[in-house]
Image (cartoon, rainbow, N blue to C red; front, side, top):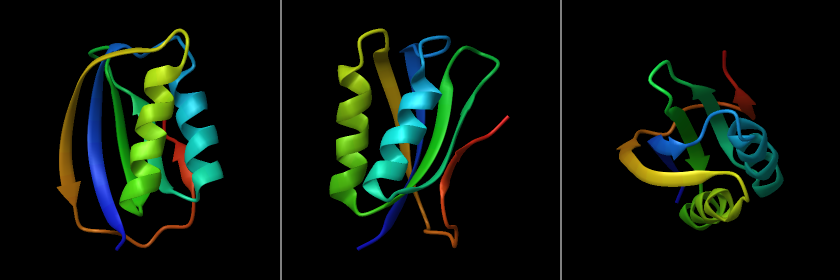
Length: 89
C-alpha cells in the first residue's frame, strides 16, 4: 500500500549532504517526492512509496557520518501522482 509522509528533520541536517543522500537513496529505493532546506535550519521532505522503503530511507539518513537527526515531525498525507524524487529550491 503506497503512503506519503511529510517529515520535518531537525538537528545537524543542513550543510552535511542531507539532501544529496536523501535524493540518492530515495531514487535507488524507487520512492518519489522531494526534499528542501528550510530557513530555520531544518530540512523538509515529502516522500511517497511503500512503508518499508520509506523506513529504509530514514534509517539510511540516520547512519550518515555528518548528519545528526535530533527530532522528526511526521505527518501522513494522501498519495499524489508523481514520477521521481527531487531536490526543491
